[in-house]
Length: 360
Image (tube, rainbow, N blue to C red; front, side, top):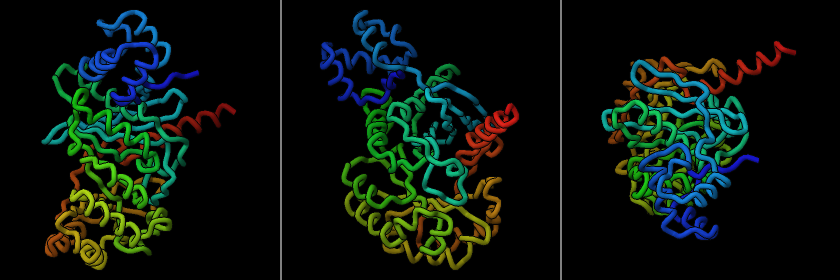
């Protein structure tokens, strides 16, 4: 029987667990410091804990449930990790270097059921949700990697945009956010954390009501129902009108800016007509909107799509800007190391399946 990751507990949960198991409350603070400030990799290294407490932790928790299967480093400094979970499943995590700090993109599910027709993540259907501990441990593994480099670098930003739909794993997502944001631990500022959703409208309401200062990004990718349903099956459940109502609630409740992700697909959603439709869709909320235009990373399984030309992206960007919509074009990173989300995982699983067939 596998033990759960200790990283899945918030500080309050860890404190309650300690008391329930006969330990003093202050032990939780000691363990927390060892986990997130001293960043040890085994319980035996927690020097100010007595032997009984260490034995109790070892009996109930794991510190390392993820194993590095593959690590790829790009010429631009981007590092992509393929992790193997305790049950043999594979997930991806990416470290990106920006002028403002080091950002990590984390995965929240094994596979994805959203069914975006341009995305490598959804090629393999959802197997299960990740626990909050497995999500936190992605950050810790990257931080341990940085510690090993001896450069005194730390993860300063997080984007929850890896494999899976974060709002489809809502409770574990929220526990993850509370752990990494805790001022006595990693202390990654809420405004340095961005959660991306494909548009689960009912969860946007719930997220707004939490009162977190975490940034929200919406994977929009099309300005009307017909086109959005073509590229994103989730639009059948939550059409554009319903999604925008939820966004209006979020903006009114939080007064926080939302980023709209818009992937540029050649001759699909990159015409002047779609640009103007996007302007019309966002004009009443332009003061709290930012559109992130994303050059498409082609995926072999979705060969019906190609990247928009630089000229078309420039024209699309110009129309938005002329109409008062804040926007930008995402800088590309890691294009030489299976850049598309889910691509490395998909490639490795295919290789594994091919080898299994050859052995039969």
